[in-house]
Length: 194
Image 1 (cartoon, rainbow, N blue to C red):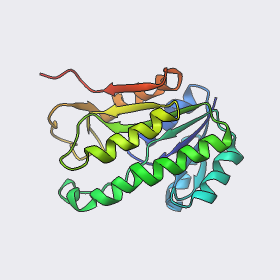
Image 2 (cartoon, rainbow, N blue to C red; image 1 turned 60 degrees about the vertical axis):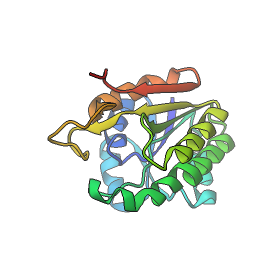
Image 3 (cartoon, rainbow, N blue to C red; image 1 turned 90 degrees about the vertical axis):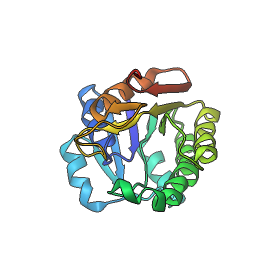
Image 4 (cartoon, one colour; image 1 turned 120 degrees about the vertical axis):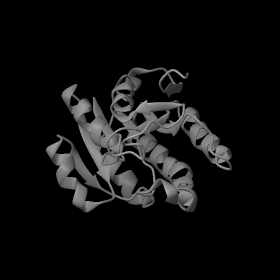
């Protein structure tokens, strides 16, 4: 399968890319950072440097790759957990405008599958944006992957466990792979609660 993954250099994308390649898929890994293109190439993906907010260029890139599936792993989160409240608007924009642009590009390319990350909890004041994001994906006939709070290397919780819902970042990546063949809907990826 040909898979276009937006957010391929993110905390899940960087783990999911080699899993997809190892399963025999041809992967285009999109990042907005030219400095991350080499890493994606080393993982076996064709790097695509593009900003999700440049809708025309994004559509051209997705159409040119001719994917069977598009995976949305984009977020706009700060490096430090303490800065999350100040970055809420940027991440909301990814979930609204970014998701819309990816869906338009996937439709223009004729992609038959769409998988998008979401979260398995609702932060105060963010529920409406998350619900709209998920509705866009479901309206396209896609799969919403609701991840628990990520922990493990490269996450906010490298040395401690967050509260539930939670999931180790490596398990989150592994659990995403079969969603390419899942029926449209919402799938929660989280460890059992206490």
